[in-house]
Amino acid sequence: MKIKIKPHEKFPGIYWITLEDEIDRLATKNLTPGKTVYDERLVSINGIEYRLWNARRSKLAAAILKNLKNLPIKSNTEDKLLYLGSASGTTASHISDIMGAGGTIYCLEFAQRVIREFVEHCKVRSNLIPIFGDARFPEKYSLLIDQVDLIYCDIAQPEQAQILVNNANWFLKNGGLSLLCVKSRSVDVTKKPEEIYDKQISILKKNNFEIIQVLKLDPYSSDHALVSAKFNPK
Ligand SMILES: C[S@@+](CC[C@H](N)C(=O)[O-])C[C@H]1O[C@@H](n2cnc3c(N)ncnc32)[C@H](O)[C@@H]1O
Image 1 (cartoon, rainbow, N blue to C red):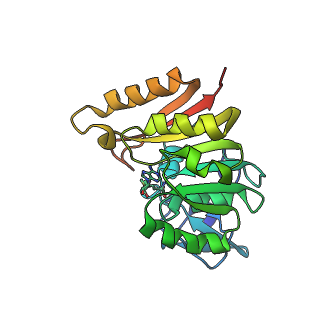
Image 2 (cartoon, rainbow, N blue to C red):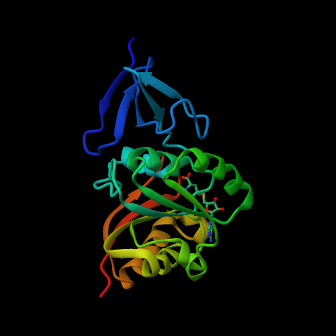
């Protein structure tokens, strides 16, 4: 069977690729042809190289498969995004593909081992800016970051919503958007995931965020939800 490709029906910069097994998989156009970030499969079609986007490795891909209504990441844009908890760059690299060379993705990470690996990808992906720092202390890296259009937060910390709020107060534009990955087990293993999601959502609401959508990410990422919200400070 011939490999097929079609653009995603809602989100520019994202594609469906159908391989030999006839399963549709998400993919992005590789900004750095020939190079992989997490051993993902590369597929060339009509001279263009795509990277398959694994929803079991990326909560953003899982959210797209679970019918995310709005993706605030634009294709070929000059937007700026702050990514809290970029790890070694699995999801950040697909955002880098989508936004293209004109975008800016400030990637904050506090684990030395993973950021060292990530820096190698940033050397070839000019839109990824690695920042070694702790998301709990935005004042410490405030001089390195401009106002941003979007914050993506995936830090698996007990105070994840509050950390997003604090960063939004420093860096997010009025009317800017956020995507928060809530890992219920990082907050409290004894409580039901739904209780944890509600508590994190109430923190966002109290701090001038309007909730757009809440998506549970199972079976791709169990006990995780993605909360999309808009920041409307008074
Ligand atoms: C679940 S992993 C992120 C996976 C990544 N977002 C992806 O999809 O490719 C969470 C990351 O957040 C980082 N992290 C946790 N707390 C942090 C903090 N306070 N400041 C910066 N990074 C943090 C961890 O070191 C870890 O690499």
